[in-house]
Amino acid sequence: MSDTVVKVSDLQYRVAGRAIFDGLDLEARRGRVTAIMGPSGTGKTTLLRLITGQVKPDRGRVEVFGQHVASLRKPELYALRRRMGMLFQNGALLTDLNVFENVAFPVREHARLPEAVLRQLVLTKLHAVGLRGAADLMPAELSGGMARRVALARAIVMDPELLIYDEPFVGLDPISMSVIVRLIRELNDALGITSIVVSHDVDELASIAHHSYLLSGGKVVADGSPAQLRDSPLEVVRQFMSGEPDGPVPFHYPAPDYHAQLLGKHEVGRSGDRS
Amino acid sequence: MITATLQRIGAVGVFLGRVLAQCGPALLRPRAVVHQIYNAGARSLIIIMLCGLFVGMVLGLQGFDLLQRFGSEDALGVAAALGLLKELGPVVTALLFAGRAGTALTSEIGLMRATDQLTAMEMMAVDPLRHVVAPRFLGGVIAMPLLVAVFNVIGLFGAQLIGVQVMGVDTGAFWSQMQSAVELDDVNEGIVKSLCFGIACSLIAVYEGYTAKPTAEGVGLATTRTVVISSVLTLLLDYMLTAAFLGR
Image 1 (spheres, rainbow over the protein chains, first blue to last red):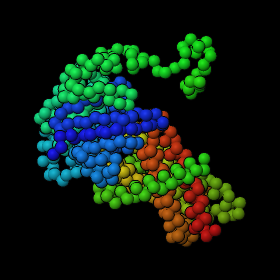
Image 2: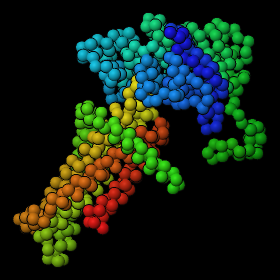
Image 3: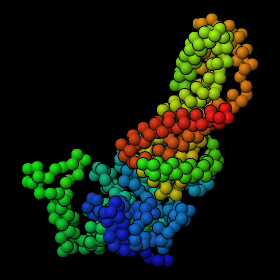
C-alpha cells in the first residue's frame, strides 16, 4: 500500500484567464495531518475542489488513493468520495434535518443498517464530538462551533480514510476553536486516517500538523514541519508566519498612482474598474 | 443573444433528461415525493381557492352580461364550465403556482447551493438531482392537476353564486345545460394542459434554483427568472396546446 494518499503534480488551473495554480506540487501522507496554508485568495479552497474532483485542472495530475481524479467518471468519483470525508467552512448541514438525521444521512444513503444499529452509530459519533445531547436540535439552533462539530461527526460517520477540512477555525470563539483543533488531531490519531487541513491560522495548525505547505503565487513557496517554516529565511514565509501586513504579499491591491488618482488623472469606472 | 438563448434551451433540455433519469429512483422513496406534493400543493391551496372563487365570480358577472344580450343567460353554466376547464383553470393555476410554489422551490434549492448543502451531498457521494431535485420536480408535476381541479370546482361555485344567487339565472338550467354540453374531451383538454404546465413550471423552478449563482443576488435573480419564464412559457404552451386541440 502506497504511503502517499494525495499527490498533486505540476498542477495548473486558471479562472477567467488568471492563473490560480501554476505548477503546484504537493502530497499528503497516510496517517498524517497535512496543513495547507497561505494568504487569502491563494486558492486553498480551490485546491480542495480539485482534490475532490469538483473541478478539473487545466494541466497536471491530482491523484487520490492512486486514482487520477480528473479522469474518473461519475460512479467512480462517487466511489472515491465514499472513502473521503469533508468538513466545510460553514458546516453545510442540511437545514431541513435535525442533528441526528444530518449525521445519519450518509449512512441511510449508502448502507442498509437496522434502525437500532444506525442509532448507536450516530450517537457514538455525536458523543465523540461532544454533542450527543444535541441530537434533536435543528441546525438553526446551533452555534457556529456546534454546527462545525456536527458536520465533523457527519464527515466521520462512514469511517473515511481521508478527512479534508476547509478553513475549520474561521469565526470560532477560543473555546470552540481549541475543541476543533483537539478533535482534528485526536480523530486523526485514533481512527488512523489521513487529514488535510486548509487554513491560515498559523498557531492552530502548528499545534496539530505533521507537515505544512505554504502557498503563494500559485505555487508551494515552502514546506516542512511548522518549526521549519518558522525558521525559514524566505521573506514571504516570514511575513506570513509573523503576520506582517506588508511585504512580498502587498497590503495594497495593484492600483494606479495614489496622488494621480486623487487628482482625477485616473478615473474609477462606475463598475469599479480602474482605467 | 439568439445563440445564448438556444444554448440555454439546450441546457434546460439536458437538465430535464437528467432529472427524468432520477425520477424512477426518487419514486422509490415515496415519502419524499409526498412531502413535496404537500409543499407545492397543500401549501398553495388557500391562494388557489381564493383566486378560483374570484375568477368564477367574475366569470359569472361577465358571462351573464354577455349572454343576456342574446337572451341566452341560461347557458351561463356551460360558458363558465368550458372557460374554467379548458382555459382559465389550468392557466391561472399555473401562473399562481409559478408565483407561489415555483419561487419557493427556486429559492430553496438556490439557498442550498449557496450554503454548500448541494456540494456537501456530492461530497457524500449522494446525487442532489436524485435527492433534492427529482422529488421536488415530481411533487410539482403531481400537485398541478390537483390544484387545477380544486380551482375549477371553486370557480364553478363562484360562477353559480353570482349567476344563480345574485343575477337570478335558473338553477336547473345552469347545472343541466352544463351537464349536457360539457364533454369528456373538454375535461381531458384541461388535464393535459395542467400536466404540461406542471412539467414546465416545475422544471423551470428547479432548474433556476439548481443553476443559481451562489450569492444572495444570484438567488434573487433566479427567483425572478422563475416567475417570468414560467409565466411566459405557460401562455405560449397554452396557445400551442389550444391550437393542437382545435386542430388548427
